[in-house]
Length: 346
Ligand SMILES: NC(=O)c1ccc[n+]([C@@H]2O[C@H](COP(=O)([O-])OP(=O)(O)OC[C@H]3O[C@@H](n4cnc5c(N)ncnc54)[C@H](OP(=O)(O)O)[C@@H]3O)[C@@H](O)[C@H]2O)c1
Image 1 (cartoon, rainbow, N blue to C red):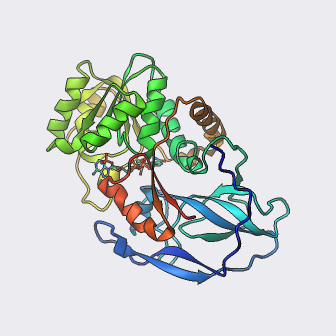
Image 2: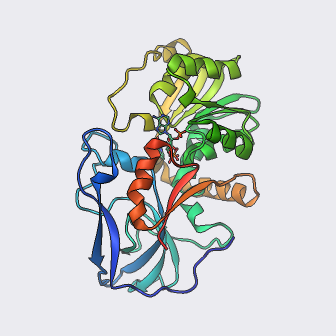
Image 3: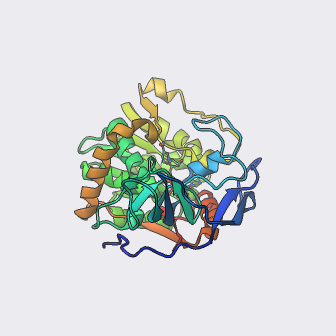
């Protein structure tokens, strides 16, 4: 349904934002964030003021809360949390962006943001819901597209396993593998999520990892569903899940190492089964979607075409108001989201 905003909302004198207040030493919690009210800034020549409408909540934000070695620097204390938004330009001194334009960009956990436009993409497509630009056809969907198509490279008839299958990236990844004619096995937390994955995304089966006490039990449950082995594994989780799948991989299988949500705020875990990387001559490749910007337009176009054709279903969990962002973010660790976690700001 078209959601492109046509009426410019009134610019408020102040707005709310959420900053990182302190760093977690172990498990992140809502106490590490602070909601602040600040004055609306004026804009300089070349700048625009954007009123954010939807905010994307992503697991990488949990990683940025820590002062730890990663592919990106830790998020600074006292600054609005990093995050992608879709919003509308409400004031402009920019040569090309006008009031009323709808834009997507990394404008953070705040109701209003100033930008020079360099980090903003204008949205013209009126056929797709605005929040989808943060999920299935945004960074999230492109992550699934890259890992599945460039690393897993599934062929028709192959068996593909996807962990985090009920989440934002996983729900797109399973559908992309299904579109390639593969037999897809999801892994997700809880019967409700597993049933949703099977019903909504057309996968063959889904394993409830929360029902498995350890990696051996999880391995047994997946082996039962894939008696001839696994050709490709798209891993959003790491830890016990990766350890469980490694021995099940067929020779020359492919593994896309996409995420480590099981490891955020927890002690590092040693994989017992890493020897299968060699024994089964596996190709396991980690990737960061931002390293592959040149492929984004192609990925976005393909994903948008699938959404418009009804071949890629979009599931979202939406919380209301900027102050709900910390709980939504911590909810990712607790598995509270089904599909993409979004915060609706107005
Ligand atoms: N490489 C890249 O460029 C890139 C880009 C985007 C995202 N990622 C990664 O991809 C993964 C998925 O991201 P997303 O945005 O789609 O998040 P998401 O899957 O929508 O949300 C996180 C989900 O992870 C699951 N989870 C939490 N703790 C877990 C645990 N200990 N073991 C197993 N599952 C657990 C929960 O689902 P259950 O209820 O099923 O447990 C939760 O709903 C994350 O690891 C993220 O960091 C990587």
